[in-house]
Image (cartoon, rainbow, N blue to C red; front, top):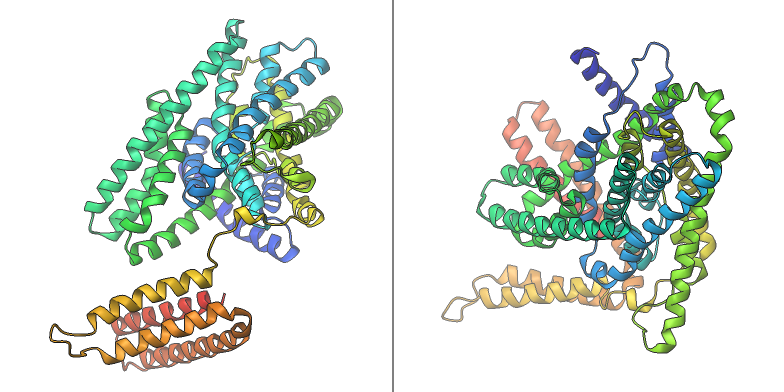
Amino acid sequence: MEPTQLFELVVAMFLAIIALHYAAHRLGLPPSVALLAGGALLAFVPGLPAITVDPGLVLVIFLPPLLMDGAWAIALVRLRRHMIGIASLAVGAVFFTCAVVAVVTHFLFPSLPWAACAALGAIVSPPDAVSARAVLERVKLPRRLQILLEGESLLNDASGLVLFRFAVAAAATGSFSAVEAAASFLVLALGGAVVGVVVGTAWVKFVRRLGDEYLIIAATVLLAWISYLLGELLHVSGVIATVTTGLIASWHQHTVFSAATRMRGTSFWTVMIFLMEASVFTLIGLSLRDVVERGGGLTTVIATMGLPMLAILLTLVIARFAWVFASDLVIRLCAPLGFERAQPLGVGGATVLSWAGVRGVVTLALALSLPEEFPGRDFILATSFAVIVGTVLVQGTSLGRIIAWARLVEPETERARLTMSQAEAAMAQAQLGTIQNLAYDPEGNLIHPQLLERYQRRATAIVDYAARTEHYIPVLHAHFDVVLEAVATGRRELIRLHRAGDIDDETLQELERDLDLEELSAISAKA
């Protein structure tokens, strides 16, 4: 394919992403489902060149920033609080699922070497961070379940990658050592964490010295790839390195970013992540053509592999249910022994957690990276794609109904001590204290009376609102509706003055920015 044609194809894919997202919004479908289906349909458009996905390149391009985005948004305090549960899912569930899938695959195909069966288990066992984000952003979960799923999706790729590498090596050499695999996993994880700490700490010190907000945003965007590539270069876990770096950067960004950097950086990052997430699902769909052609056509694939693929998909789901419910039972049995810090999820919570294991880009990339001569490669490729499609289409679309059925309630221990209104009141009181100290000159003369009155009035109103929130909500909504209408009127007048030639472009841009900030503030306050 010519470079120009490749670029045209990328532009066409982005246009298709916008159209598919719009269609999903209008039809009430998860965008991931529309993108996956749309990519699969586009793959068979006559005349469209075949899309060959380089798995290593896909992982390097897409995985680091998506992992960084997940780590950036995760609640670090709750991550530490639930680290045992997250480790149980990210390590224990992955190893258990890999073993169960390997046993079932060997039962279905006794001639397939155990190493190949284990490779399939390692490929399909870790739920995917991108797919989990695409599903979770459309549903409302209690904080504990949210943090368990987010933490699992960030860390379990390391477990799956270690198992996959050992399975491929075992297929090539004919030997496998569980002790060596466990030791290697610890070295990779700890080494990745060390790399992440070093890179994250260096980023904090570096950003503090940069004065230009665009340089800071550029350095932050590159941070994901730097930590991942450095981890892989040092032969430790690039996944753990990226996640650790993201956690450190997220913790310090409140102190090293200015307001302008945060606003502009967030806008740029949000658009970039949107395009990358959407591209991942579209590429997964486009890769269907290669999988089907290697299997001898869609009819042949379904006829010869349909039932085994369905059996492995069901095995995945059952294995996750078994692990989650068994873990919840252990927590319940340990409660009388004094281990009360971890609370059981209950049937509803365990069901939701079990049903949320959606697979995606890592599964596909690992499957495509198998050597050409690997035993059972075509079956592993087809099964991996079937697992991705099945979990996204079935579990992704039905998770909302499962959550509604479970009627989950936020435990008291997971709720913040202060509501948002109470936190805002505390912030307003602190600001008023500063104004009261600075409103007078050294001789005790009031030099900022209007500013002092403004902050006194604001603090009083916020404290009163925190005490009677329900009473004020309708009034505030009406208030900010008026503010938004005034902003719209001001914008129309500003544009009229510019079109009439009464003001220049610079004046338009400066005043328009003030209106934009006022509008965003009103929308945020109303929400």
